[in-house]
Amino acid sequence: MKNVTLITSLAAVVCSSTLIAQQQKQAPPPMSFFVTSVGVGDGANLGGLAGADAHCQKLAAAVGAGDRTWHAYLSTSASDGKPAVNARDRIGAGPWFNAKVGKVAQGLADLHGDTLELARLGNTLTRVTALTEKGEPVKGVGDNPNQHDMLTGSQADGKAFTDSADHTCKNWTSNGDGVAQLGHHDRTGGPNTSWNSVHPSRGCSQANLVATGGAGLFYCFAPAGK
Image (cartoon, helix red, strand yellow):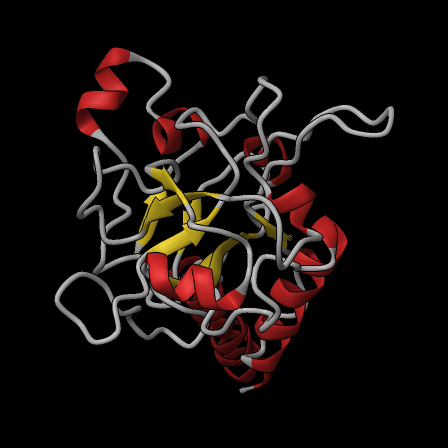
């Protein structure tokens, strides 16, 4: 009788362990990408990269995703003896998933279309997948107001501009002078359909960002598994 009880107990332990393993295996990947649901509120003055990162972290924490380290997808220009920063170098290696567990991109190469083949295939960033941290869509072309302009300060390859012009509203510290390079989260409008580099803003103030077709929103990424 004791042997039967022991066998039954062992079988229960094995079944329980198997069930736990299956549940862990099936656990969806955590959110590692979102569009900010709101901007900082001071135009393109985000408080520099540190302020933008803090905004990403704050929004992520509000929806239970603050256990990962978030970075804003923003480039900066070389200034005051400091080198330029490329947006693509700030976001880890991927893969990245939105709040609905939709894969945005597997890695940096397909996110930016680094090869001709990958550029043809493109990433999955569209109006449907470029969701906020709350899992909500962002207003785009056809909505009132249109808010599809995303602050990036970047070229299409995710790198900072190398000319002497301002593309980052003085490295995200200006709400007045300067302009910011913008992408379109809905891949609609402008001279191309780039998610990260379509055209410059009219200026750096909140009013100018709104007038261009945005709200001071930007992309946030977290390295996979962190």
